[in-house]
Structure formats: structure tokens, C-alpha cells
Image (cartoon, rainbow, N blue to C red; front, side, top):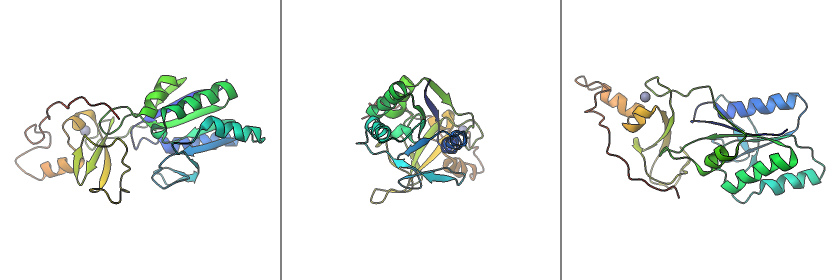
Length: 231
Ligand SMILES: [Zn+2]
């Protein structure tokens, strides 16, 4: 019986590495799969991991219909046993529903990998729909670590060195020509996310001899955020 499985986590927790390993393991047992990704850090039509491995992949665009794409291939006689779907947080809700239908109607396993929440700590729509529909949700066991050593559970956006908590949901880091500045991401524990304390802010505080980086006066808890709807 095929399954829709969502492997979720923060950045840096090895999702793409696991996606590649999963593809290898299934391929080694003679199963045939297709690999999809969207906006991989290495470019289009490639799935790459931070450990340096990569493979060719099909790029998921907003107008891609997974159901049509898989039915077309099956009709043409191509065997497909499973799909690897990386960066699934960027998929549309419709696309996630198409994946569920492929599992149910075509008995094809779908292994989806994605970041759960965005830099505001709100669920990505694709991840939300996967959590709602998946047969299994697995939180990856390789833990990303905050600069303080605690388990990192959030993805902070840093623009020109300053952490921000408002803005467009999807801004790909480091490759953002024409925009206002350099966008980077850093994984943080919840405590340091709430205090807006990135590794850079912690270092800046630490060089000042009279304060400790954990001093609340250095990094006060900011006022509560206004509740905003993801658009
Ligand atoms: Zn921390």
C-alpha cells in the first residue's frame, strides 16, 4: 500500500541528504522513482544537499499538475514506483492534493521533504497541507543547532545583518538580485528567536566586557507581534 510521507524539519537538518539517500535505497532495490524539487539552493532542475551530493531533478513550477505529469508518463509506459519531492514547503495546496491522489489512485509512494514553518514561525501553505493529508509526518532526527547549542526549531531571516520578522514569505537567501539587501537565514532555538538574538547579535554583545550575551538588557524580549495572516 503506497503512502504519503512528509519528512519535516528546519533548515540544516539534512532533509535533502535524506531525500538523496532515500532515492538511492529505493533505486538499489530496483524501484523506479522521479525526483522533484523547487528553488533548490544550487539552481533549477537539481536537488543538492549541504554535504555536497546532488542529482538531477524535475523543477516544480506553480502550473505543474503532478497528477497529469504522472498519468502522462504512466500512459506512455513509464514505470513509476515512488516520487521524491524536495522543498515541498514551496508547493501549492493543489499540488499537495495531487500528490495525495497519486498515492491513493496510482499506488505510487510519495516521500515529501520540507521546512515546516517560515521565518515568522508560520506554517508554509505546502507544509500545512502535507501535515493535514500525509499518512505519516516524520520530524527529522538530525537536529539543527542554534549558536547556543540548543536544538534549533526556527528559521530566522536576516537582512543586512539584522533579523526581521515581517516580509514576503518566500525570499530565497543569498540570491536576491535587485532587492534591498543581502538576505540570509539562520536556525535558532525558540528562546533566541523570541529575543531576536542571532549569532551575530550574540557576538556583538559578547565583545562588550560588561555584559553577557544572555543579559536581557542587551537583548530584551520584544513586544508581541501583531497577528498577521499569511498571504
Ligand atoms: Zn539559542
